[in-house]
Length: 287
Image 1 (tube, rainbow, N blue to C red):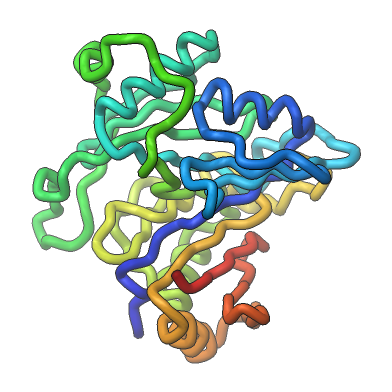
Image 2 (cartoon, one colour):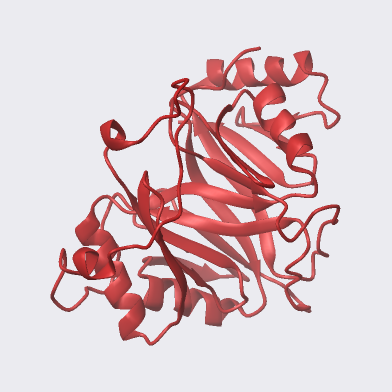
C-alpha cells in the first residue's frame, strides 16, 4: 500500500452558507480572515490574497443545519504561534462571540466556536513535534483532552487584538462527521494512503508526513446517517495540495489499485477530484 505525499497540506475549504453577507462579516471581522472578494454569491477569504483559504457560497433557499448528518464537524485554523492564537481569542472575545469549549490536546492547544450557521470552527496552535507524546509502539501520536491554561495562553498577547490574523495562518485540519468510522478510515488510509495517527471511541485521526492529523473522522452524532441536503449549510469541498503532478498521478494509481467505488475525475489543470464514502468532495491539486 502506498502512502500519500508526505508534504500534503490543506489549501482551502468551501462552505455553503445561509446568509453570505452575514458569514463574510463573521469570518472577516470576528475571526480575522481578510476578505479578498465578495461578488456573484461567493466570498473568498484568507491571509494570502493569491491563494484564498476559505470560499463561502450562498445558498439560495437555505434550510437549517442538520447536526446529525454526515459532513463537517469543524474546520481547524492553525496559527503560527501562541501569540497569534491568543490575539485571535481576544478578537473573538472583543466581538462578544461565544466559545463552545477549550482543550489542551497534548499535541496542540485549541478553542472551539461555531459560525453564524452553526458550522464548527477550531482555532489552535501546535506544540513542537519533539514534545508530542507517542504510544509505546512508537506509531502515531497520543492525543488527550485536558483543561487548557487559558490565562497562560492569553499572556502571550496581552494587548488589544489587531483586525486580521497574521500571514501563515491557514487550515491545519478538517474534522468530518461520518456514518461509519471503520469504512471511512479504510478509504482514507487504504485508498488515499493517509496514515492512522490515533484512535478514540468512534473516531479516527489520519495524516500525511507524521502530522498529528489532517483529517478527523467521527460518528459521535452521525452513526448510520446520510448527507444533509444541499439546501442546508455545510462543507462543499476540501482542497488538498500535493508536491507536483507526479504526486497526483501516484494518488490516482493508488485509488485504482484499491478498487475505490467512486472513480476519481481529472481536471483540465491536472487536479484530481473524488468523493469519499460519505459523498464528501475531495480535490487534490499540485503546488
